[in-house]
Structure formats: C-alpha cells, structure tokens
Image (cartoon, rainbow, N blue to C red; front, side, top):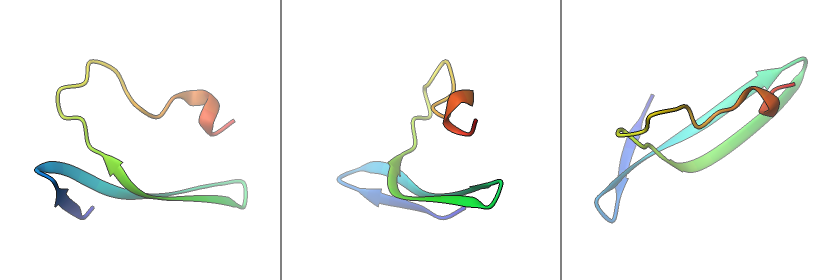
Length: 45
C-alpha cells in the first residue's frame, strides 16, 4: 500500500475486485483514529 500526503493528511488508493467487477478509487482519506471500518459489507455484495 502506498500512502501519500496531501495538505498534511494521509491518502491511499484502493482497487477492489469481486466476481469479475473492479472498483478503483484514488485519494481515499486514511482515518487512523476511526472506531469502525470505512468499507461496509454492502459495498461488495
């Protein structure tokens, strides 16, 4: 995973594949103080 810094905040890129479909997202904010997950189960169903 490559982490980049933009305006002092950590960002990552993400590529998810599921059942032949893919989702590419750039510049996702990496929240290191989060209590729960950003990627919920319904995103991949």
